[in-house]
Length: 184
Image 1 (cartoon, one colour):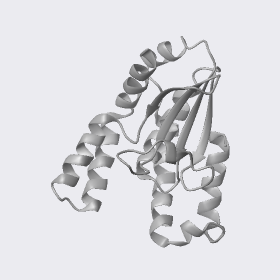
Image 2 (cartoon, one colour):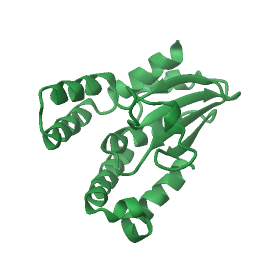
Image 3 (spheres, one colour):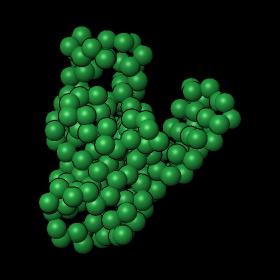
């Protein structure tokens, strides 16, 4: 689906959770409400840097950026709007949102340490060949996550620290990582 379709589905989940089995679980529904707010904030405030814009505008061949995600995912609430805004800088790039928990289960081909961590960005050329894969979080954020997990921190504390990391980084790391992947 397009990013716009994803936003519509996200909003439908919030307005009609009874139509979406996963979101009938109050914990998932509450995560999703919080993620809607986070996404909205990034859509308003995040703008790709001038350096990233210059770089992305040099892409002259068509690319498809496939983002595997779910509305309940906290990391996706930060990364997905940033990725969509980054891709929107160049008309040669189209965005395709694939839900992790729905067919065709593309996530099964892009596991992280054997797990279905999201979001995952798959960048393909016009022939459908993978050029790069990124995710589920920027490297420094992933290192923080693994370190806190290793220390045995409570999951709610980990989520809070990850949230602080995204807010402080403001999308800098994700832009640098995507640019580095595409320059290879």
